[in-house]
Image (cartoon, rainbow, N blue to C red; front, side, top):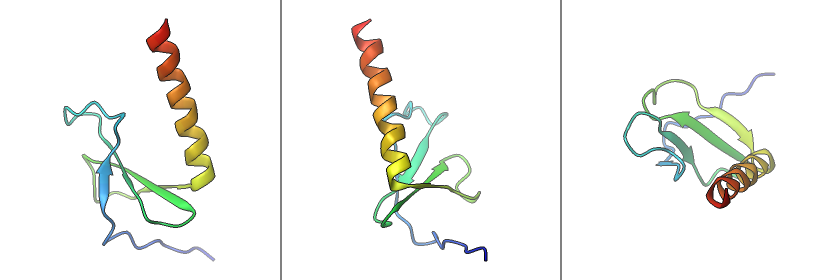
Length: 73
């Protein structure tokens, strides 16, 4: 059974890792227990990618480790 998540009323925020120039903007929506919807801000009507909260946390931890490594090196 395929379920569709209704994100029509979702509140989106730009990721702090986006470039802020409007060309590479990733948006996430909070307040969805257990999941993290992610979308491209340039194409808000396209489907969002849905990650489990634990997968998203692991991904963000890796991004932060990479950012820290570049700041040091």
